[in-house]
Image 1: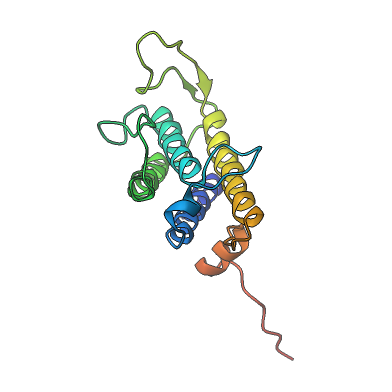
Image 2: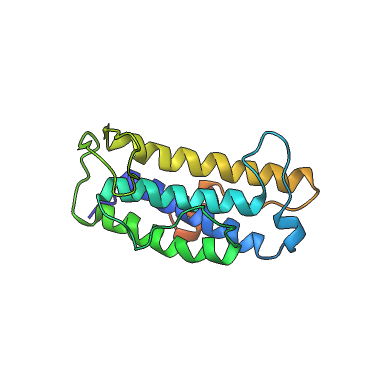
Length: 176
């Protein structure tokens, strides 16, 4: 069976966040609190934001909570706490595509995460799918900016190392 391209994109997104979290585990507590102007916040805050947002997009797309209570940024989220929720994100991505072809034009009427008094937004499924990928890439790049601006190494989160890890990209051996 052929893997849908969007599923591949979401899997790469989760892989990149996992790899960034693993890289950030080598940082000191003070380094996790670094930031630079023009970015979301500290490295720790930005990682937590990526994961809570991913859970939010998946909850909207699936029409059900990934777990109860939902992961929210209502407290100082630790790196370990954010990392632990990546398993929920990874599982949610697989569940989203587990029922066969995903209808990107399906109208999503609401989200289980909507709080009382908040407005209800309707949207086609392609919008949160696309935002999932864009949002994660944008904020991981911001963390890369923070790391680089502070003289710290940055992990390679591009698609190429991911594809090579999966055997989907490799150097061709010339035979003559």
